[in-house]
Length: 183
Image (cartoon, rainbow, N blue to C red):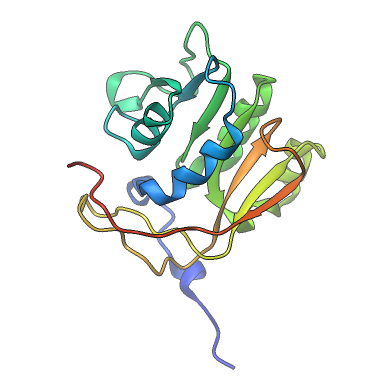
């Protein structure tokens, strides 16, 4: 049987962290965002991101922040927000999860599905983690190509959540379609 070495050989550097989320991977979150009065903080996003576009299009109020704009997630926090949603840099997932839990607020963070394992993350999760998992892998906008989603990633992705879902595990189908992030 052939071995899938994709995840083992995938780049794990800060430069490879710029994998931008397509609209179809944000759409499933709208089902769980029923209170339009809540303010969503997207701490790794710019105004043109799929997170901002889908969430504001769904009637949510969104605050975007990004390190490029001097708003480093590990140092910056908006004055008022209710729920954190984003696709953080995978190379910093432990630090991101620690900080996300420290706010003691709901969140949904898109990460590699295998992030569920790990001694450090096990301690961080403290049995409070929820997951939104999909029937197929999420593709990403990569290498500056904002017109086409690169499908066939070497890993599955899931939203790691806290106080966001109605149960510990939610399964959903991804309705994939390709559309440009910047139109």
